Image 1 (spheres, rainbow, N blue to C red):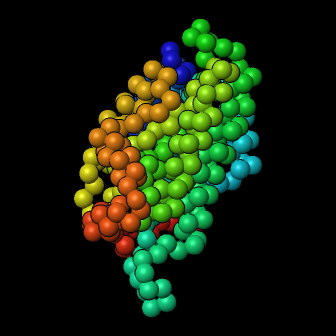
Image 2 (image 1 turned 180 degrees about the vertical axis):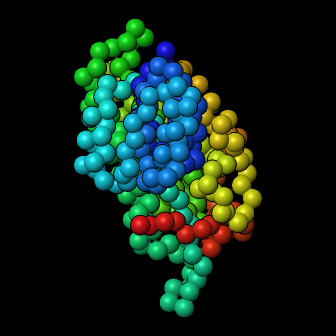
Image 3 (image 1 turned 90 degrees about the vertical axis):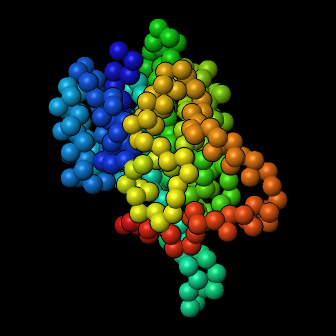
Amino acid sequence: MLHPSALITGASSGLGQALALTLARPGRRLWLGGRCAERLNDTAARCQAKGAEVSTLLADVTDRARIEAWVHQAGPLNLVLACAGITGGTRKPSATIQAPHEPPEQVRRIFETDLMGVLNTVLPAMDVMRRQPRQPDGMRGRICAISSVAGLVSFPGTPAYCAAKAAVDRFMVASGSSARREGILLSSVVCGFLDTPMVAGNRFSMPGLTDVNTACHRILRGLGRNERRITFPRWLAAGSRLMDLLPPRVAEAYYTRQPTGAPGSMPEPDLS
């Protein structure tokens, strides 16, 4: 069996939950982490009903010490999926700030979760895998982090999210060259909008919205092929790359006239 043991963060909802349920089967050990006890327990129960052996951790990925200890305890690991993340957009002008803006506490929380939370998961996972023997295919393990098409652009509506996801993608792909020599695959998932609770409150059309189960199969297929960057929808990623080649003023003139990601069109994230 490919990936007899897998660790997943953000497993209490959305893509992380869907990946856990897709992977769940007899003979597979799943380590599932999340912040919501009720939803995490529900995911675990559903995975167990499909025959998987499941252990859970109720923790925030920003808690470096707890996440590192958990990852080391879980080893050996064949697959690690860093799925935990949050998003948030700019707010409308207010009495004190006369332009669209992103609150500082939101900026910091997005970076702490979407970037540092990924590193808190990926770095100890690499340490665990370095000590594992190579499998017949030459690999010691595979680690996948969820980036975004948003990381390909400098979109005024979601500045912190774009920057954090860009950093995740660059780190995974750039580090992947050396990691591959150690038998560790580092993959970045550059995806568009996914039909998950994270985007359910968005008050605008979402081009290329992808069913979460379709996304799961695309990600797992890419990992099976040892893809360093797993991208979908490709047309959306290609268009985003082209937009980012334009001078900022030209790109902004287009972005600020679109309903997608307009100030106040996204729900405020839970910053607790």
